[in-house]
Length: 195
Image (cartoon, rainbow, N blue to C red; front, side):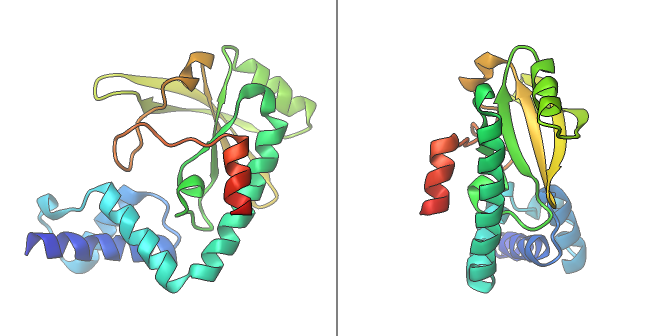
């Protein structure tokens, strides 16, 4: 019974992420549990179960639209990555995993020991941006706070998380499965687009 309940929650959360363009997986799980009238938090599915349900839902009900959206987002990512080539950009997140919706951002990791170099680079390219910061877990005990730059390419938001150069060797943990995040370089993204 608990397995079935977890799957019901995962599928409801996935439907909300696909249909209502919810981007926060934890929020989607909470809302799904409320909608289904389930109060026992121990029955909540893990993030990877929701991600799997989301992928299935998109393939079943939105296959063509999803292909079109991913192609547009990945081409936008590629253009940004080419512009940011001196900083070894890597695509990550839902756009890479194939589960992005129209409210997701393109998430790129860039690498430099001097974050201001990114600011100067964007300014040189006449790209207005906002500065922020975010925290990424590196292990169960350690995390790193990274500067972030946000800007838009047309209607699509691009978020650059700026890691020190040695961050290329150790990807932060994914919020989906708590394993090192998958990251794709320019050649990998080209293959995704052409494939």
